[in-house]
Every structure is written in C-alpha cells, then in structure tokens.
Image 1 (cartoon, one colour):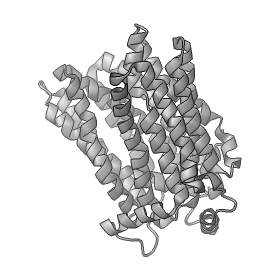
Image 2 (spheres, helix red, strand yellow):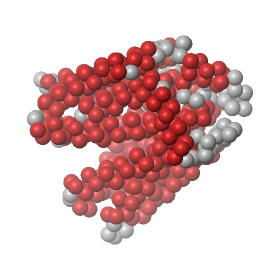
Image 3 (cartoon, one colour):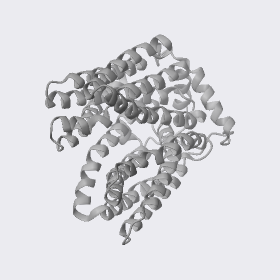
Length: 422
C-alpha cells in the first residue's frame, strides 16, 4: 500500500490519525443507539425511525454543507462541526445516565448528529486535495478508505463488548472521549482559507455546482454508476434473513463483516491504483464485480460461498469507490470542490437507503434468494448500460482530459505555503 501521504504531509497525517480514533468512537455509538432504543421500547418500528430521522438532514444539509465548504476555511468548518458532534454525544451520555432516559432526546440527538455530519462531510472530503500533492491523491483516497474500513470492522465489535460490560453509558463515554483526538489534530493543522473571491453560500451557488456536475458527463457517469449499483444490489437489509435461513443468529456478524473485510483487502493492496489513468473503466469494472458477486450470493450452495462472495463484492465496491474519489479529486476545481462533495454525499448515501427498500420489497413479493440474485442481475445490466448513456465516463483518461490537466497545473504550481510537504 502506498503510504507516501502519511510520510510527506503533516496535515494529512494529523487528519488520518485523529479521524481514525474518532471514527472508531462513532461506530461504537452507531451500535449503541439502536440497542438503547430497542432496550427502551422493544419496538422494531422505533428503531427504524432512527433511519428516517437522519434521512432529511442528509438531503437538505449535505448540499448546503458543500456550499459552505467552498466559502469558508474547510479545516475550521470541520473543527466546529466536530465540536458540535462531541456535544451531541455528551447529551446522549447524560440522557443515558438518567434514571429514565428519554426517547425523544435520542431522536433529537440523532437528527442533530445527521445535520452536523452532513455539514462536515463535504468539507472533509474537499480538504484532502488541499493538503496532499496531486501525485499522492490516489494513495490518500486509499488511506482514507483504510481508515473507514478498519473503523467499520473494529468499532461495532468494540461497541458490543463495551455495552456488554458497561452499558450504553460506557459506549457514549468512549465516543465522547474519542473526539478529543480529532479535535486536537484539527487544532494542529494549518488553515485552509477559501480562494479569493469565493462564492458566498446560497441557493444560486448550490445550483451552480449542480449545473457544473450536469455539464461534466464523466462526473455524472460516476454518480449514476454508484446510484444504480446501490439501488439494485445493496443487500444489507437481507442479512438477518440469510442468518435465519442458516438457523444461526451468530452468522449475522460475519455477514456484515465480510464485505468490509473484502474492502479492507482491496485497500491494503491498492498501490497499483496510482498507475491507472482510465479511471472510468475501473469504476465500471468494480461496480460489475460488486453486482456479479451478489448474484453468486443469491445462488450460493452454502454459507462459505456466501461469505467469500460477499467479500468479493466488498472488494469490487471499494475499487469502484477508490477510482470515483480519485477522478473527483483530480478534475474538480477547488472553488467548486465543496459543492460537488455535497452532491457526491447524496449520490453514495441515498442509493443504499433506497436499496434497502428495494431489496426488502422484492424479497417480500418473490423470495430472499430471488431478491439477491435478481438485484445483482439488475445491477449488472444497469451498470453496463451507463457507459452507453454517458460514454464520457468510459473514455476518461487523466493524461488527456482537459479538466485533469488544468487542475494538475494549478495544484503543482502552488507554493509551499499552500501544500505542506514536510
């Protein structure tokens, strides 16, 4: 794995270490929230409402967060929102310590967290091209994916142990403490002021970003591929039913872990991605592997096959995601990067939400297996059709693409005051 960004950029190193610690803490709370709601209410519906509470902020504030990221110091915005998230987690802790915890406080905290996360994510994504050199962007994307994969595997497992030993109070306490690492790291990073003459956050500015994305058919193709692959294929809502089919609730954890394990392997062996120039073709290929592997899961003769091909699916999705992020970072102008990151947040967040609805409804109407292999088949067909509809994504080559050439020229001409190479 290419770790040059960690060696050469002090700011990326700080962001990586601090973000890794706080993300593990966030995943501990990710486990604690639904557990506490289930414990308080015993209602499946009450747990499901958590997802609905978080959906509206994602759509509304994700776009506005992108506009903010282009108008203010991105590091400062990430710092302020991270402080806000720390306060929200502290509220959850205080509520959990009460003799009779309030359900409405949990919902309100979930809503507030979704708002802050939606405001923060575009700035966090748009920050990376400002703190690493252009030739390190592929490696930086892979390292960020590694951080997420490790946190997604370790955080829930750690959360389960903490809840078993000390209850949800201990889980929220650990999460609150974990934010100290990210806050300290952000305070030590250098400022990243917006470009001179940056647009003020406004509806017209958001619309400008959406128009830019529409004109850039290669970018539109990356969004379309991810949306199609998630909408038709996303299988996670079916995992509990797969576990029941094998009459083993203990299998459930393995089912959730398998795709992330495959993604982790793909990330750890991702050094080759920096030598690829036709990113669009690998975005398509990775999405086809993801979809095709789920077809095999749907017809798998035993659990071993299911787990192996879930891992293959996770690896394919990670490869597609790495090249999407690289293509975005290489070609989008800095003054629009935040707004485009807001659009990207929608593209890779809404798909899984709708995919869960698709998979469960299709399973209800047909069967579990048909929903799996049928969804995978729809994904293969849909992903394969996108390059015919938007051929620019398939033709993309960073050696000849005008946007990539221009952004490379701008970034390499920055002075040492803009990019830390220490």
